[in-house]
Length: 236
Ligand code: OAD
Image (cartoon, rainbow, N blue to C red; front, side):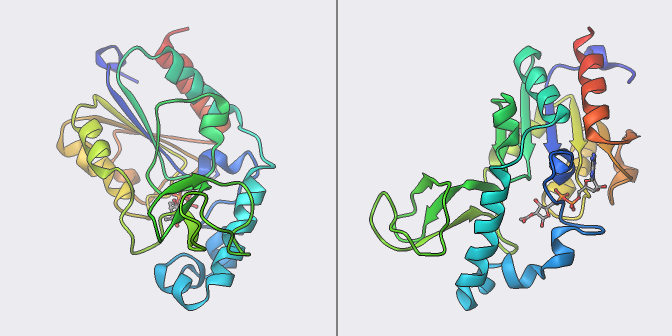
């Protein structure tokens, strides 16, 4: 990519495509999670109010599944990039799995929450959580049986948006990896970046919905494209 030598501060947005080669289902497209389940049945506050058992069971299954999966070459390459990149870096992930962290990445922000946390609706405290929530276990902090998955549902505000926009404002490069560009506000980051004059690069299996906004799109599996891009950036 031209002019990469000028780049110091980077924001990377990741989506389900980064974890696809680890065997975690994506949301959209053939066989995706949202083909098997209706969003309004399992991923909204209204669904949880109406049928908490259905929602808790759905997330219990997902929480259990991610613990059997391993990071892939894309996660490991981004973790290496995090270790070796001397400039500012923020890996904003829409993913609720912990594969970036298990690969060793540190500068990771989970804008859609995390499967391995439970959030208490009574005391507002988040606790690390690996087991099921369906039996309504007590909150480790306050004892109330009011735990919910710490995952952002449709109609809820994603986390830490001020930090994300702050990082975007000082970024020289915005890279989007493995996301369809279907869900806002993340889908709008590329346009925000462009308005700020930031270079934009997409790495995805196929063109995303916002593909036209990127200066450059590289198409292929993240497990190949991400290690190649990291090599290029680190110059080795
Ligand atoms: P999607 O399932 O919408 O999109 C996944 C993208 O990854 C698609 O563009 C695929 O082409 C691409 N892809 C699939 N396999 C790939 C691979 N091996 N390498 C590279 N790319 C690959 O997932 P997201 O964009 O992450 O939100 O979805 C965004 C949000 O919608 C999720 O965070 C979730 C969902 O509803 C909430 O639940 C709040």
